Image (cartoon, rainbow, N blue to C red; front, side, top):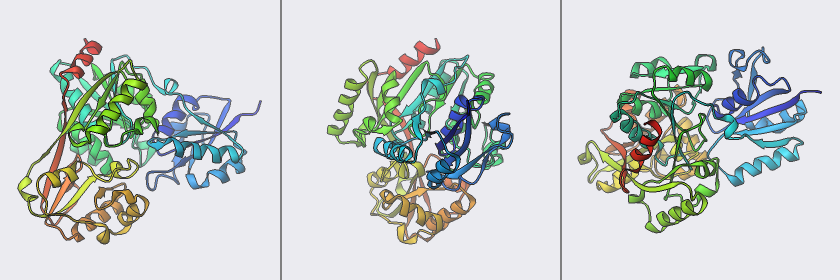
Length: 438
């Protein structure tokens, strides 16, 4: 029988994991290509032989998703597997309809068959959308485990945007590790808070290798999910965050709804800044569609290190990049901080945006008058710096989880915003964690 020819649609992360789990050692399948989208400049690379395995001695090419139709017809492809996250159900089936019209089968990979099993207890933190508060929840759970005397290692959803052969398994314990691995701003946003809290974090490309390395120094593995993707490890406790600022998205986004349905604990976060009617809508959906899960409300408590810099001043708000891009939001913690502390004006940076930042606004108009902290390349970091410095304002309100001054030279004072999880329904999270780790 001839091999089934397969293309994997991805965005540098879930696509590689699905290949590793389902296809790398399958002699009945030939993966002819990956396609890439969402993240700038990740196509045009090669999934290298060291990762692709002996069936692929020349590696696997990565093409822009725009070339999918041509690739299907050129290679007479049998199957296309959708392998990226935080997109609407309408978007997924639109892609599927095109693939079917072009002559191939269209598929979505099983969550069960792409979750690796650990020798240690696994607690997974996931969400129904990007920007709901996974990272603050991961920090919250980490502190509970530390109090219980457990050695915790966080494993972060992949962001391998550089040399894939060098990113097989990455370990981060210090800021120097971030510099050594040439981390992007997005990577730093996810890794730095773990480092600041004294925890080791792993990431990379091959999550079987990563898991086995993490197990060597951990009593508990904490899966820190990305976007709204499903866990790469089989969890003993699965926590999913739901966003009352985007009610109904828990039922209409992929694969967030999968996390919503699989969760043992559903956290309705940010209730202190959301419309109570929308909070209730989300609570009702939780109880209706996943009645076996515990459901709690939490607040995302926002703090500012120098609020006096904001009061009465013209503020430029900088937010976490993915929250404003494929997360679809038009505000975040920085915006709330600027409003709460009495900014005279939130300055629109769009007229002053340069290069790739200007392009980002064209692609994601929902970002509005907020500046997404984009930094996937040296050029984009330079464009971000130039945009901040050109914007006429008195203060930069930094709503990202990192200290941008470690990367940028900014000509304005910065008020740094932090946000932490607060339970409003007792100590349910610790109660459920204790049942898993003893």
